[in-house]
Image (cartoon, rainbow, N blue to C red; front, side):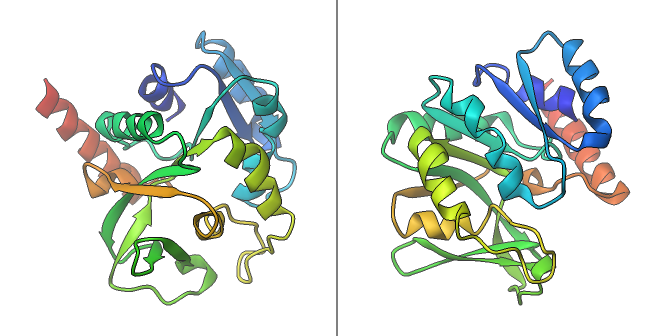
Amino acid sequence: MLDWLLDLYRDVVDRIVVVVHPSWADQIRAYGGSTGARIEYEVQQAPTGMLDAILLAREIVAASDATRILITWCDQVAIHPQTVARLTGLCDTHPSAALVMPTAQRSDPYIHLEHDGEGRVVRVLHRREGDHLPPVGESDMGLFGLSRDAFLNALPEFAATAAPGKATGERNFLPFIPWLAAKREVLTFPCVDATEAVGVNTPAELQLVERYLAARHAADA
């Protein structure tokens, strides 16, 4: 999966930070050293959630000259290159946007973004936190483009008061979206194919993504 992500983002990022579990840190460092990619590592010692994992990269970002920070979950290997291209394009054409992110319409969603009448994201529902989700919902895709200011300033401000989820006990990144949308510009756009939103967490999801990527490769051949 990491090989796939390196290929997918190779031409759109300058530096890579991988956040790893301590039990896999040595193996991931060894893997990264064999790729020739410019990878840095942060170890999340306790599984306190994706919000805390992302914040581990703050010092590295602060020491860089990055103007836009892409965040992705490492299991999101089905993201289409055209979706990445549109994300980076919107980041370039909307420099004032604090966050740009693709979304997907999915049946039986795991996540659902609620919008107000003006299209602003006002709430994120999570199945694993026990929220009631609609039969068809708008899901994130584990891919986000944050401005430098949003990453270095807004995200820590949000994190200072963010509470753990009631069911999981983890501090999730996704509630940051409506919090940020209430203060700054957040852009969402549709992905190419809803299957892009499938993360690889089970054997069934692995088979689904493998079939999707194989069909996409055959269509491009």
